[in-house]
Image (cartoon, rainbow, N blue to C red):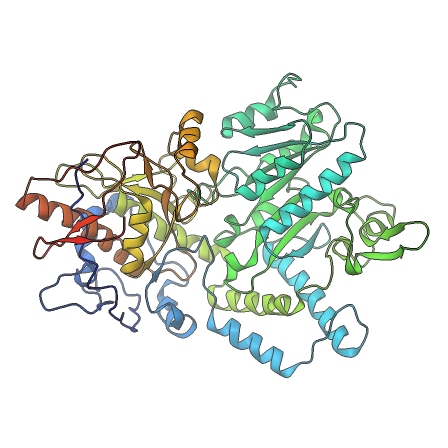
Length: 592
């Protein structure tokens, strides 16, 4: 396999300091240059020196959406004041976590230094202050999400995965008390590993992975097929889980499924678990909760993906479904109202008390379901920080609707720019993974994420880890690999089960040490994701970098020489570790 000659020189750039100046957000037609983010030698050319308009030829202007959204004109000031820590580099991994605002930290710090907070489980004045703050912020968070506190409760967790595990453990414990001894679990192929792992708590393999949306639709519409694992037994306990947005591709899945599950007589006893971790980052969640009768029973999310700080998750529970969680076995800290340890072993769960005390469906005592499900002392300092984060987010951006419009326009710009890039032989530079065409630009179908792989002019794939390494050295922070979405990534890459087994036998595994390309197929993707504070300039800089690193670099070298070096064969087909400098043609060593 020939050595690629498509990369820019990196070895001399690794130890140079990046400029601390932030490039303001100006209209594309007015801005003709970008200040350098790296310092270069007198004869070096860099992607960063290219005028912004130089990438216009690869953007499909017929499909380019407007980017003048409600806060676009003030975004330059927002970035300068609130995100000085984003000056050194271009952050494009918002799906991992978005970036916190400076005001969130300063307000939280001020609150901590001017108040005395105690453990909420105590009854002294500092403890009461903490408890009151937690109660008020719980309501604030529910209202921010558009979830009516009279119909929904919020349970604070460490992260979205912890929220999922709470639901899974509760279903396992409840099923053990039932005649069947287990529960049925169905999950969508685009599920994060945290959702996939729930299947291990079922007995006798009573779980099923829906391969696509059509299978889910068929499941909702068809009669029960008792011979298929796709269906649970009549009247038995079941749980159907899926993400609101794929953390791999950013595709947004239907919001109608929970209501349809609840409305199907044959699915009585089946509950829904909705993973909103990716969706909530740039979407107005009121669409999920506006109709309590059609909302998911359980919704997990991570607040740090929305605000950047604090590191906190949550589980929003539909109160009419709260009794499912109340019967879990484990208890700890203040989740019980009375416990016997000497002699007979028994306890009274606060969660169970809350779901039965008033005797009316959906009606609970003042304390709420959360009192019996938040084990131990709450991370009350983090919850106090959450209150500040919500206020700052609303002050800066107005609403999640504004953020949705902004990121939808930006990701369409990124998508169009990448889609239009071609080598000199007209072969596309990128393989972009999308379930349907024309999704970008439609916030109901697509989030602010692009998943892709880089291809060489002959169609061979460049290792995703090499692309990430190259980007990282040039100050672009993206993510690569399987991104904890096995069903989604191997479906996108068109793997057959036997090919996945072969990859495992070859020694491939998730993480940065995995094998990037096996038998000419990539084992993962490169993911770029945008957030509320992402700018037009960042998108255009990234497009310029991609064009300079892969298109210009290859075409200029190909014009000078048609010779190539053949790499070693064998089981794996990897991108070799040599790159060619565009200025003098010298072959340099770089990480593969």
